[in-house]
Length: 422
Image (tube, rainbow, N blue to C red; front, side, top):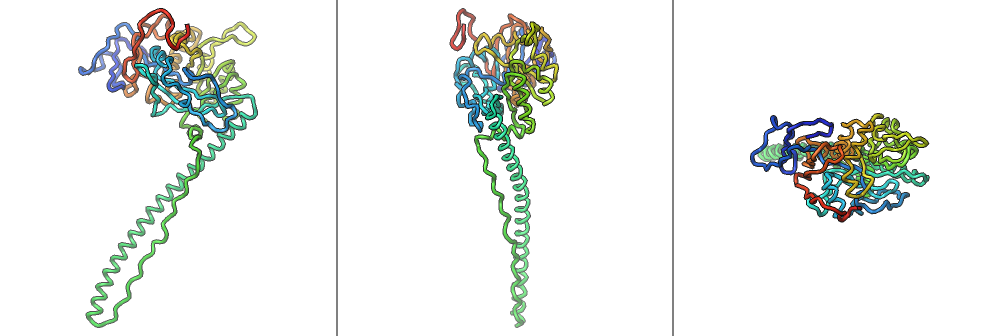
């Protein structure tokens, strides 16, 4: 068994019940319930399934209005839920995909999905996995619409926060009003009873009847504050302003990344950059902004030189948590992901960072660290059993599970299948 931090546990046991990990550890210290069936994995490596946090796998081409003023698009609007690539992803040991919506300024709401273990439609994760997409574009319209949308969302958040405080004061005033009203009613009843006694005594003695006591007036009840109007289409923006969800910035160059950092700095967002090109040159600034990065696993030539650069290692060394993205929507690309990450390790990326980037870091980016990305008790049983080291060439998937359900793996055979390229 190998954990996301690289810790290896030989002769390990993973206990799964009702789709969740119940226990995981050395066989000598982990109790195996007698009522659960056992799967023998001798000689294999058990690991958490891959989490790809920012993906366009199976989605149509990048089509969108880059000057769109509001994030009206959700990734679910154009998601093909039964695309064959999602079945191939499950077979390759992918447990969760964070699906990017189309481009825009901002580009809409991304959603996390889990491939189906037995094929069919993907599962949209209801418990989280939302994020905001933001694109970097050289036009002034992009910047104007992006900043304008975020400013509007910030004002809506401030209005909602004021309303929450007003509602708190309203509830306190209402409770005080009701308590005062109840006290006046109790006093009124007591005064009325005393008056009846005094009236009866006066009538008996032939004396004048005393006047009835005046009723107390509780006044007007407090008025409930009016809820501020908000645009439901922009809920993802408000959640980004509140840092409840990540803001995924798609940047193709260092200058794009720098421009986005300047534009977004006033909003203090939880940033993750989907980087390409020479974005690694901005690693220090991205790290200083607390950003994570999602990078394609590969080496690059430094411009004007034959020297190779390992962008993932550069970002990791600068202090940016790293996760990975696919650059090829095919079975071959899915199957080669771990191997390509392993090549990055040979070129300087720490092994622990590589393993963390394949699972735990992607789950954290999506806000699903309490749902997936590891082997801890309580996490979803999204697991893969490999026949060798996860980062070595030639290692194959022996078995895979999603929410504890076994993935139907294909029998080895020649030729491409539906949804893959030769």
